[in-house]
Image (tube, rainbow, N blue to C red; front, side, top):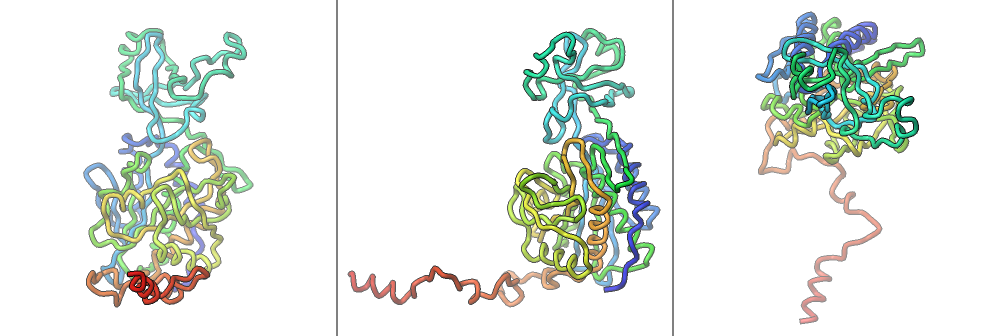
Length: 396
């Protein structure tokens, strides 16, 4: 494979910061879709939009099939108004799966049909001077927080006068900070940091004027946080699909803020044996720091594509991140490793060229995890069929 220049990490950090400034909870993603589409136009990468706003781009390869796709999601967690209270406060429901513990104390933007209001998400008992230790006894749930709007709003009628309605979206301020240590802290790194890494990889290939061996489809989805993601977005002839997402750095996990992770399994089950190991081999070949990990409470665009019925090989690449779905932190090392591995994958040959034209009635081109004889070698021996049949015959 050709020698590659180093990724433009200043570009990665700039587009990440610009995306973090765009609110995009699931269901409120038009602006972030427009932003990413403009970046693709700058890079000269052709794309099309689905009806709902998923972006499907194409890097034309030297051959058109089998295709591969890589996907990162533009939507984030957030909240939605579920109730206008008699006291002028607003009850909230989460958008995506996350704890209200991380919502408390946050500054937010409330998007009405007519404009934007600012406010804060607070526990029902929000004043230490009024409630003292009762504040600490309050349960943690979305039923025990409320949105205080920064406007004269003390009754339900005041809410209605302000144009607030059930179903209005609430976006949480990202509060991004880049430090000299290389750490990047913000809400919504999931998955805007993954999107930034994918755009950076596309920029690298574009400026180096490198053509992939096979057609590649960078995909940007808008409903990953609620489970549907890439379900209806893949071109029909894609055989390999790599999701790009966040890797939790926590006790019991193997991921690191300084490496890229290859997920071997998530809550949807194991990822494809061969595609995952193809990525691991590329990382080893090009000295890209990598970890293997399993994610127990997690789904991805790749999982949604399989659930939708696509007959594809799937894998998942992820940047290491502390406090996922909270106030998240990663390191530029992890994003650089992810970018480099994505670029190498996009230029690599297909895992199985035969996937372009699978033969359902022949084993000739079917894959091997281990040779059949080796896989049957174990300490627990299966008795010969003849001996079992012979015993049965003698018994009769």
